[in-house]
Length: 418
Ligand SMILES: NC(=O)c1ccc[n+]([C@@H]2O[C@H](COP(=O)([O-])OP(=O)(O)OC[C@H]3O[C@@H](n4cnc5c(N)ncnc54)[C@H](O)[C@@H]3O)[C@@H](O)[C@H]2O)c1
Image (cartoon, rainbow, N blue to C red; front, top):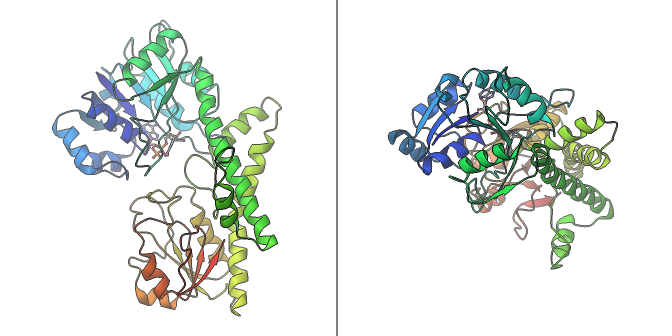
């Protein structure tokens, strides 16, 4: 099988490797010359993918990567995994989907199936992707096939990966669904057919809206508990002892990552065009979006208790990735904490040895030295990577603001919880 993967990021690279592991000839395209050059040197930039795996696929001739789209010309399946961010106005930015389809159009062969994986609003595959790929005498569902399959990858999850996580696929017609299932079955253990493109597009938005709304609820509970003088972590953990009807979500300094803060807004944008207002989504977005500010205000109150102002205080932010054990800082609330504290005049530095790629704030600590910890007025655990040496951190720090409930029971430093 010859399979193309367009966009070799957190979603595309694991998918490309999953196909190559099963012996498919994979052709990966990305507009980033840096990424292509790293892959050609056998270097992975995605945490869950080992460089040794890339080298092995390349050695066997199963992975060819390029910035040149012409390499996809013989592929029977083309998976599109490009970004779908928001514009500054919070509207969907599907320009990456459009740009990649404009290129695919020039090289797609008759009979190939195109599968959009990028998260987007219902209707994108039919209206936008089909509109670009269809030409005179080249019709979707007949001359080429068209499907949507939402990616469910959970970076750093050791149990569920691209291969063993059930994958939903919807086609523009039965032939498209069958064709996509045929290719994807090579690498994916369990495929779940959807009745249409739009149903498959909507599934991803339900999944991520479910998370955004429940995180919004627990973040509001954190603020309520704070007012009542209660420990929100204790309340969640007690509630989670109920064996049915409750699913624990945990509070934090905000919502991060490329999916959960963004995807629900694709749906609210689409619904506004139909004169329908998505109140749960908008409320969750408002509460989660205000958490970095709430956190900074809590931190200021704690410092105030020590007769210190935020202005002039030395603050270390520990962990700036958007979640535990990943190297991705996209939409990370830690970055908002840093900029708001800096605006208030604090001297903020940060430490996260997992971050090797992407844009980061300037005052980075290369090492977490005893001296830097001792000098800090406050150490803030924004993201709790498993490899952090918390015994050492607690021993050396004067005060710690633990936003992730990482330190229960540790007593040496003064510890404050969200
Ligand atoms: N990261 C996740 O955990 C995750 C999970 C599920 C779904 N998704 C969705 O999958 C999609 C991709 O996300 P990601 O995290 O892999 O993004 P990413 O930014 O890590 O990767 C996207 C890649 O596409 C490349 N690209 C951009 N424009 C291109 C073009 N015109 N042609 C070819 N390549 C192009 C970029 O250079 C980049 O390497 C998004 O829609 C996202 O919402 C992401």
